[in-house]
Image (cartoon, rainbow, N blue to C red; front, top):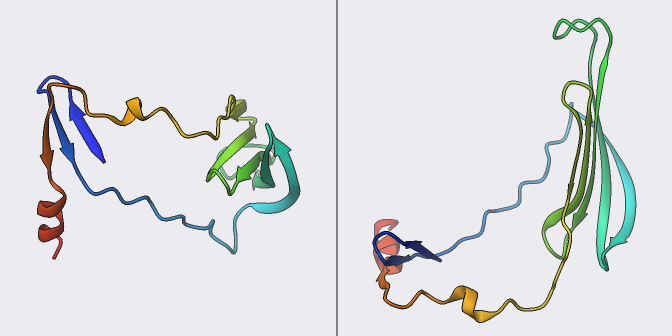
Length: 130
């Protein structure tokens, strides 16, 4: 992982570790409904509908508040390609990943800019964690 600081013309090279996936909690909480599988832009996704209800009087509300989140997750890409949120408190929100390209990105996007000094911190970080 390179972290570059343009004002200093320095890039720090550090060990990258991806975050671990944490499955959603089970038990009390939202009602989950499996929406099955479909394809979005040629990518297979799995759908889930979560419904939460805030009961009457819980926050000064005189009737139940029903919130819904519909998510379409791609295990191949590791992200939701489509998420639809319905919440009467904040309105409807849609989040959509578009223009999906599954080819290798151009290598030029991963090069350290010319004239930058590289500080390799991988060994220093490994020694510090021992």
